[in-house]
Image 1 (tube, helix red, strand yellow):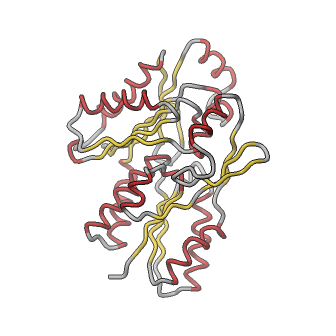
Image 2 (tube, rainbow, N blue to C red; image 1 turned 90 degrees about the vertical axis):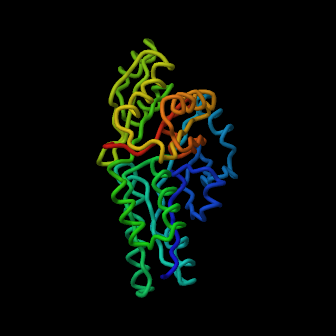
Length: 290
């Protein structure tokens, strides 16, 4: 069996220790403030994650950019030269053009390396929902699954990868076009917190809203209660935008409500964090449906 390498991009927001332990290759995306630009490495080496959120909190606006085909080629080609095949698990095509760039790069590289296999999968996932699929595929690879088997495993899991989000600052959703300016203004005045998820098409959608931060966190647990399957066999992921205390509270609720295998908490990086803002909180697991 030929060796294969699992690639993803920094939107997966997996902890650096898991990335290193499972030998996952992460392509950094670009973000920046006005005339400054940075690469979003998993260890946040170019801009400390706490400083990033501090700048958002102070009113600065961060922008993000997709990964182009040339960058994919630069990361993929050394592995192909070394005789490795590639399984790339990409950021939702419903949220970014990055996946399309990967297809262009893969096609060009297949012509150059006809004996190599390059598989690109649209996870239709974001943040650690994408990370959950990458982590699970890497675990399956460790168990001995071939590239084709790992790809099939991921494709089966995509419709069952549950993403549940809440945000503390509605203005970031307003800037991203997720809610209107009126809803943002009224919602802020009334302390309304939206509940969102990523749907079957990989799009971020508002689903519900509640009054108050604590209720919004409890609502994430309610969504898990509705659809989670076999929690005792699952590693549950929680992401946070500089609100570790809230993430730990949510993790406590999950552990008290379910006999889960493990709960892993990690920072939400600048790419997704630019759109959720300070106080964004996310919960990911496998369920009966998204």
